[in-house]
Amino acid sequence: MSRNVSKFAPDFQTKREMTDSNRQKSSRAAKERLWNMDYCKAMCGNFMLFFSFYLLTPLLPVYLDSQFDADKDLIGLVLSGYVVAALIVRPFSGFIVDSFNRKKVLTICFFAFFICFTGYIGAGTILMFAIVRTIHGLPFGATTVANSTVAIDVLPSSRRNEGIGYYGLSNNLAMAIAPSTGIWIYGATGNFTLLFWASLVVALAGFFCATTIKLPARERIEGKPPISLDHFFLTRAWMMAINISLFGLCWGVMSNYVALYGQQRLGITDGTGLFFMLLALGLFTSRIFGAKSLRAGRLTNNAIIGSLTSVAGYTLFALAPGLWAYYGAAILIGLGNGRMYPAFLSMFIGVARHDQRGTANSSILTSWDIGMGLGILLGGVLIEYAGYAAAFWATAASQTAGALMLIAFTRNFFLKRKLNQ
Image 1 (cartoon, rainbow, N blue to C red):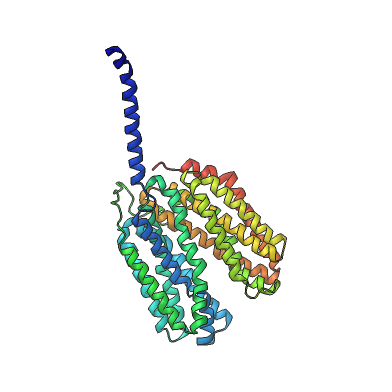
Image 2 (cartoon, rainbow, N blue to C red; image 1 turned 180 degrees about the vertical axis):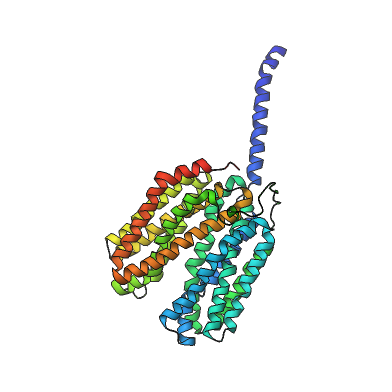
């Protein structure tokens, strides 16, 4: 009898060890929750950041025209100031976020972003308005970098790629509903001052969200050089930066000239809202359904699928002008970018040390902004001298070149430089 007991004892021991191991794994999984409180606060803060900013965006040209009787060239110059300011500050904001206490940096940047809305209320001349708008781009660019870096810090490492994908939903949602909300408020009241105060209040709520985030302690990196190019731009990701710039160029052309194209070529006077709503729907759907593969670490696959889907969208737009192509392209481009951009952001984070997350965030944003800026310039020149068809074919060509570059070169570039953290 004792022999029989001893014979099965190892089996009982093995089963107990397996049970204990499963319990430990379940315990770790329970602790590594994706939707922890600090991550939710970071997402809420990001939503309010973008909502307050884009609540005004579609109406500022109307405001400048009615309040200061500004012509179209001057309006474009005034409103473009924040883009230049954001582009300039982002590399430095990455360095600051990585070098100092990230919570304090986020708090200071978000407060500066919030307080700038008071400048719109007090600006009595178009020069003062231009100064306020340009200055506002500085904390906007810095806060977007700081907040996304903080969101990555509070994510468990096992859920980081998935969390990055969901994080983008907060600004996608804000950019989808804020312009429509602003237009509705103005249509109901005709009061621009009320819009400025609404943005101020929403930004203040976002600031309070940021101040309540609790960050984990960061390890100090020994032997780190005091100043180097890597502090301002993630040089390990240079090829990925070029690749994402090609995609940003496409977005710059499409987002800035689609309304004019719809109005002048298709006779659409009120359909741009539907175009961007379908675009946002594609972004949402793609991010939600792509989260599982991001969690599994299939970053390059997601990036390739997204880039090829966007190729189909931009090509459809250029190849078949008409309402069905106009709205169908919006869905395809949204689906493609919603899958491609989070994967690229995870790839930038994947080649950066944990003390370089701010630099990684600022690097991808800077690269995207450079591409967008080139797209705005190229699109304007091509439309003026060669027509809309040439501009949209150039967009499709840039997207195709970016997808081929990703498949042939960037994928292996990332896999060779990926760090196991």
